[in-house]
Structure formats: structure tokens, C-alpha cells
Image 1 (cartoon, rainbow, N blue to C red):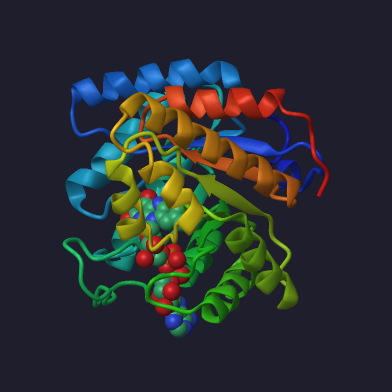
Image 2 (cartoon, rainbow, N blue to C red):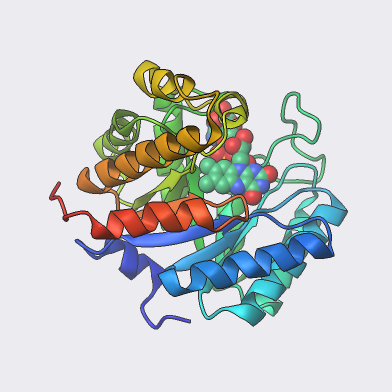
Amino acid sequence: MPATRLVDRLRETGRPTFSFEFFPPGDDAGVQQLIGTVDALGPLRPDWVSVTYGATGAARYKTFSAVGAIRGQTDARTMGHLTIAGQSTDEVRRALASYERLGVTHILALRGDPVGGGTFTPHPAGLANATALVRLAKSVGDFTVGVAAFPDGHPEGSLDLDARLLLEKEEAGAEFAVTQLFFSVDAYVSLVERFRALGGTMPIVAGIMPVTVPSQIERFAHLSGARMPAEVEASLLAVADDRVRFREVGIDLMTRLADDVLAAGAPGLQFFTLNRSKATAEILGRLRELPVRSA
Ligand SMILES: Cc1cc2nc3c(=O)[nH]c(=O)nc-3n(C[C@H](O)[C@H](O)[C@H](O)COP(=O)(O)OP(=O)(O)OC[C@H]3O[C@@H](n4cnc5c(N)ncnc54)[C@H](O)[C@@H]3O)c2cc1C
């Protein structure tokens, strides 16, 4: 594991972090694919890798087993996501203890969404929101805690409420944030500005989703609430019937977005890999060849 604290790395100027997010596979074949992906991305020297968390019992087990497998496979710092939806505070405490046992000291503290959709209602013996989880994690162990941020706004809130909540999380002990996927550099920059205007200081890592197949356009927007600028959507739709061209255009667009957010001052990029290595490796490879632009 790297000697520099993650938070110190994120605050270094001119040397952005690169990290990869994975999801816990459902079966042995998926675990093998994940390990292959982690291996393939390893030479790119990620500052950390992270694993998403599902609220149901079986999904939780899969997260811990994926984290264990990755930790056995790579020297990269491993971050565990943790949610509170559908769980009592005791269950969340046990999850924190599991992470501690696995040697995972970096947590992304999230609320999660209700399984099957609908309005979020806290578990009767559970925590109210992600801010409460930040407080809990900081109180029970030596965890470095990150939180979610939403360039296009959280679907249940507003841009101003989001910025206030981000500040509340920082005051509760969060030390960095990672954004939801987004397609417009302006959305990222405005989020950072709203947060800084309130006095928030924590670094906000930009979440980048490689777009490689046409079905992703609608699915990503539906799942995340991210707005795709008309010109981005038009250039993708123009090649939607040609899989090879679509992939090229998608990788070009995401490389440009990543380069633009770094030029705008983003402290790092978190790639949502979907457990595949090629598109992320391509974008990162191209970024490293581009001349460095100043903010
Ligand atoms: C980088 C990233 C990784 C993610 N990983 C996962 C994952 O691994 N597993 C998973 O299930 N989900 C994951 N998510 C999705 C996330 O759980 C959902 O987006 C969820 O709806 C919101 O989580 P949150 O942590 O922002 O919640 P919260 O901070 O609790 O906020 C959610 C909403 O609740 C309301 N709210 C909260 N606190 C207050 C308050 N004090 N006053 C008034 N209103 C309030 C607001 O409307 C707010 O928009 C991830 C999201 C991101 C961006």
C-alpha cells in the first residue's frame, strides 16, 4: 500500500490521482473476470481501487469477498463502499468491522437507494442519511471517509441542498468526495464552485464513465440523473448504428471530458470500469500522452 496518505495525495497539485471502481461479481466466472481486469489495470498504477456495496445480505457478502480477492491480488489501496439503506445501525457497524478485519481503512460512505426503487425510508433501527454514516465511521475506527457528490444534482434534492449536504459531510469528518458520472465539465465546475462558496475545502474527485455501447446512453442517464449535453448526445447518436465508430467516438468524448476536468482543477479521476479494463486503459493511456494543461 502506498506510503502517502490518500488525502495528502489528493491535495498535491499537478499530480492528479487515478482510481478504478469495480462492482462485486455475482459468480465465480465474474470473480475471475474481475481479477483479470484488476491485473490488466495494475500496470497503470491506480492510487486506489474501490468496490461498490449492495444492501442485501448476499450482495454484502459479495462485496467483502471481492474486496478480499482484490487485496490478495494487488498492492493498490482498496476502498470499500458502504451504504445504510435497508440496514440497522448494528448491521452497518458489523460491516465497518468487516472492512477493518480485511485491512480496509478507506470507506466511501453512502446512503444507497431502496432495493426495487421507490422513496428512501430509513430502517427503523438505522441511520437517517449518509452524513450520519460518516459520523459513525469516524467514531468507531480509524477510517478515512469519502462521500458522493452530484454534478447534475441528486434526483431527490436541489443543487443548493446538495452543496449544503456536502459541507455537512465535511463537517462530520469526510475528507474527500467522488462524483456521480457526468458529461459536462461545466456541471463539475459549478458543483465545486457552489461547495467552495459555502466554505467547503475537501477535494472532489471526478467520476468518469467510459461510454462504449449505444444502450448506455439512456441507461446511465436513467440510473444517475446525469444530463448529457445535446452536442455530446448528437455525436454519439450519429454513430449509434456502427459499434466500432460508436466506441471510438465514446472514448474520444470521455478522454476530452477527463482532460477538461483535470484542466479545470479536478484533483483526480475515478473510472467506473464496469469490471472491464480496455476502455479505461485506453482513456488513461491517451490522457497520459496529452500535454499537461494548467487550470
Ligand atoms: C461515487 C458514487 C459511488 C456510489 N456507490 C454506491 C454503492 O456502492 N452502492 C449503492 O447502493 N449506491 C452507490 N451510490 C449511489 C448512492 O447511494 C445514491 O446516489 C443515493 O441516492 C444517495 O446517496 P448519498 O450518499 O448522496 O445520500 P445522502 O447524503 O443521504 O443524500 C441523499 C438525499 O437525501 C436527502 N437528504 C440527506 N440528508 C439530508 C438532510 N440533512 N436534510 C435534508 N435532506 C437530506 C437529500 O435529498 C439528498 O439528495 C454511489 C454514488 C456515487 C456518486
